[in-house]
Amino acid sequence: MPTYHKTLTVDTAGKCDMIDMTSRVKGILAESGLKNGTCTVYCTGSTCSIMTTEYESGLLDDFGDAMERLVPQTGDYRHDKRWGEKNGHSHIRASIVGPGLTVPFVDGRLVLGTWQQITLVDFDVRARSRTVEIMLVGE
Image 1 (cartoon, rainbow, N blue to C red):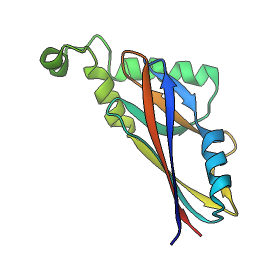
Image 2: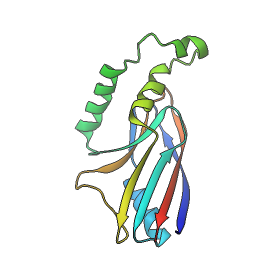
Image 3: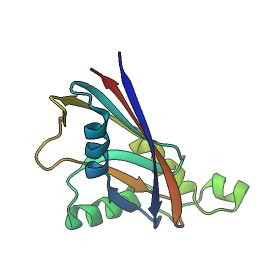
């Protein structure tokens, strides 16, 4: 089965920065020439995640607030004591959401809901340059 791969570099601000990746992924699908299959989007970092959400400013703020309630930045994390980076909460948040996402595509179009976008979330405490791997498998 044919495959197509692309590596993207994405600069983030950290601190629950959310970036809409949908148009970039759609562009890669278009350049691949594949029509039907699956698209995997994967961030190669232990403090960032890939997910779907409605990429709308109120929801983006709500998501950050929810993450703060679930896994507070000011928590007492053994990881912080061991490494001194103060990003233990970042690792836990990324572990909960997960590093990757698989989306089917049919007739050359990603199968996403009307308000569903592919979103990178950087949970780390500082700006970063993230590597995102896009792997398409199909026909």
